[in-house]
Length: 348
Image (cartoon, rainbow, N blue to C red; front, side, top):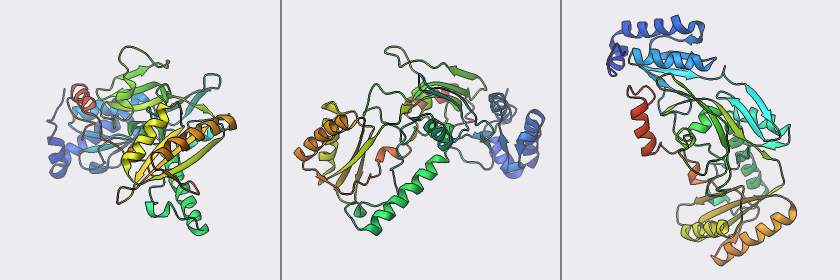
C-alpha cells in the first residue's frame, strides 16, 4: 500500500526532508551499502534482480519514482537512480545455437568482444557517425576521409559503453532492422523486473508464428513496463561484408530503392537513409557472405539504385539512419504501462 500520494514525494522532497529521509532509510534497511547518496540524489547499485524488486516496491510505498537504464526518467528530486553495473556478467555462450546469455548491466562492447573471440558478432552497425553532415559525403580528400574514420570510431566507442539493458530499452539502435530481414531474431529470451517487483522470465525460444510476443514490448519500450535484468541474444557468424552508398536527388527515390532491393531478394545486414538540408538522400547498404553472394547482391543493389537515379558515392560513407534516433514508446506500450504500473514509478 502506498503511504503517500504519487505527487507528494516530489513536493515533499523539495520542502520536506523528512519524507526523503524515510525513503532513504527504507532503502538502506533493505539494501544496505548498495544505496548511495542522500535526499534528491539517491542511487541504488543493484547486484541481483531481487535488489531491483526491492527498490521498486519501496519506491511505490513512498510515492517515489525510479530512473531506470534506458528509461525516460532522469535522476533528481523524487527520482531514485538505478544502476546495473554490478549486474553485468556474461553468463553463458552456446556457440552451436549462437545464443549468449548476459545480464542487463553488461556493456555492449564487452559482449561483442566476448563473441568475437568465438567468431561471432551481434551485427550492430557502428557506422552511424552522427557528427558527419551530408556535405562531407561526396568529399574524397584524405583529410576528410580521416575525419570520417575518426568520427565513426568515436561513435563506435560510445556505443560500446552502453549497457545491454539501456540498449534494448531504447530499441537496440544499430541492430538489423526487421524490415531488412523479417526472419532475423536478435532477442530470444528476457528477464525483466516489472514495476510491481515481479520477476518475469521469457524463456529463450525460436520466433513464434502465432500468439502474442511480449519481447517487442520491452525492446524499445523505454523501461516503461519494467527493467531488463537479463537477455538471451542471438549472435551471427563473423563473415566478410561490403558497404555501398548511393546518392539520390529525392528521398522518395531512395526509399523506393530500399524497398525494391528488399523485394528482389537481397537480405542486407543493414540499410540506412540520411537526408540533407534539401531533399538529397543517401542510401547505405551493407551486404555480407561469400564473395559470389556479395557480388550478386551488390549487382542487384546497383541495378535498382541506378534505375531510380541513384549515383554511387566513393569512398562509401555510411549516413546516419533516421530510425536510429531513439523513439518514444508506442501507444500500446504506454497503455500496458498504465495497467502494469498504476503508481507510475517508471513512467515519465
